[in-house]
Image (cartoon, rainbow, N blue to C red; front, side):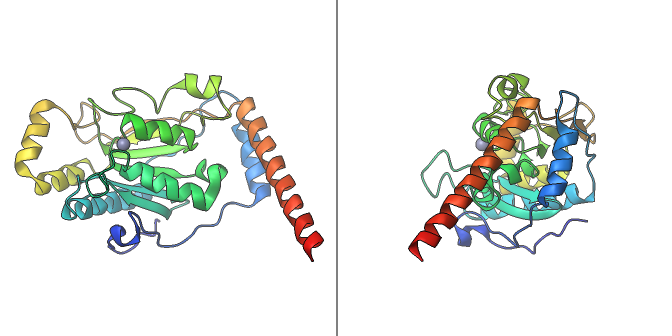
Amino acid sequence: MATRQKSEDPVRHGGYCVPRKCSVTDSSTLEATLALETGDAPAPRRSPGASDAAMMTRCIELSRIAADKGEYPFGTVIAFDGEIVAEGINTTLRDADVTRHAEVIALSDAQKRLGREGLRRCTLYSNIEPCAMCAYCIREAWISRVVYALASPVMGGHSKWNILRDDGLSKRIPEVFGAVPEVVSGVLLHEAQQAWRDWSPFAWQMIKLRGLLTAPSAQDNDIEVQPARSLSLRHYLHILFMRGRQSRNRIARSATLLDNF
Ligand SMILES: [Zn+2]
């Protein structure tokens, strides 16, 4: 069961707040997991559960905090093994910076904490389908699972541009882009809608009329799951190369320390 932090204003922490750090799985477990993950077959499917609902509830809470701050109501959580690693709200208006989307803010913080190899084992939650810019960052960060409530058929990086599920990125440039993540849509759809309606009933009516934010599937209450693709052999080799480089850097740092002793 997910541990959800109590309601807290993320803006006081520069756009995000972090309840606790998580520990990354030990290397032997990771090796075993990697051995199972190579190949082109779909990765094991992780069905939506109570943890997803708890994380999405926090996203919706963050979207309300964003609205209270005069921002558009977007909220993102990044979680590892049921614990929140980082979270963010949009700060595009406050910072006068169109790139300050909730997902990008959370990804930036999570990568500093866990590195890309850690991010590969994380889930990114958002009350709205990530846009094309954020979807691109998600793929480059190697996030392996994305969960959202409302679809964004005009701007979305999944339903409109298919960046989240594009095989070509990871097959042609595996050292940059992670494998296709699992995508789960429609989680707490009505709660996410209500937050937007409460933010501005008029704006919500306009959004509905223009079809900007909708239910992800024809069945309003359906949660749709699209399975991840497994890491390719080239991904696996790249991870080994990165680990080798990290080890060499650690040895070099130790040698420098000894020299200075
Ligand atoms: Zn975005």
